[in-house]
Image (cartoon, rainbow, N blue to C red; front, side):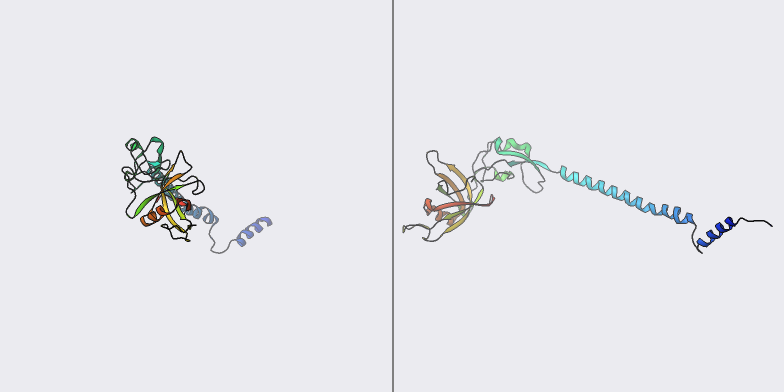
Length: 231
């Protein structure tokens, strides 16, 4: 009779006890299925890498499509003759905008501007040439102002509100006595008089408003700068 060690019987019995009926071998539960599951994740990683690379190329193409154009480096008044200090180069995406390429700088130097324009305005062919102000329905009125009647830093292209205070006398004017009038306007030019403390401000506004403003005493006029520049 062959003697079998008790420890061997316990080990064998323990293995049989822990294995459930119909259970797959350990090799199936670990090695095979895990290797098969990794394949879709690898393919997904490749697709993501390709997609990111394509997006980077598209973004680079959009940045590269920006072209150098000319913009105004400082405000200019209508009729001002452009010099090299008046324009600078900027790179923008100018699809559908009739801009002037930076390489064509010499073609605009020495020519007047057709409008009063603020700094930073894109320079176009329509903005260069003979004066085209005022447009139909508008007029330009010049008012003589002293310090305190207008803010410092007023320049062509500034948007303002022109306020006329009530008349303090019974003298008839174009503005009704006792009523405060206010009109929106755009500054066309600002000229300081050398031998006087008066500054002449040319304002573009609606034609009827311009007529009323021209009839108002200069001592009753005040100019208030409002948000924004240009027309």
